[in-house]
Image 1 (cartoon, rainbow, N blue to C red):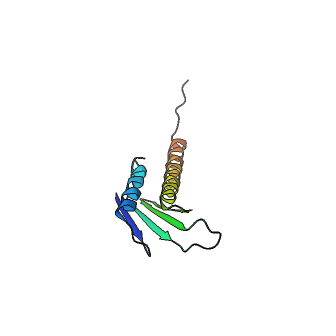
Image 2 (cartoon, rainbow, N blue to C red):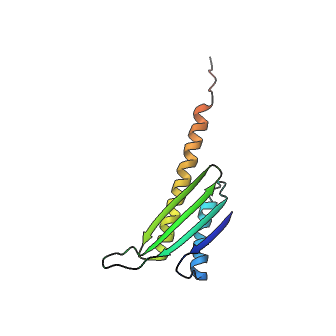
Image 3 (cartoon, rainbow, N blue to C red):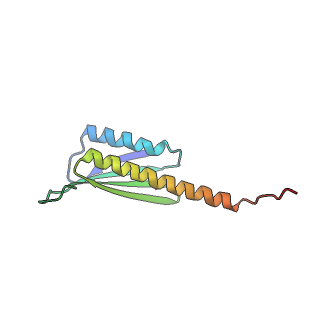
Length: 112
């Protein structure tokens, strides 16, 4: 699994990069086959009453489906945490769906 942390306008410091990679390890702990994780960090200019000035986008590549999760927050670290938990939730939901489909196709033998 590769983790790519990138940003367009802001400079990605080593602290933010390490924190994002540490959060991305939560996804690998699920035991799913994740090929690549791209974390895109974006800082937008604050407007008058806009508190959500940081946007984090997770792009999780799995064999068969790609997952995109976006999160907005005033704090960059909080946005990373929210995006990670959203990606974990979506991956868990997809895997549970696959498990129930596999279980429903099994034939149960009748015991007399």
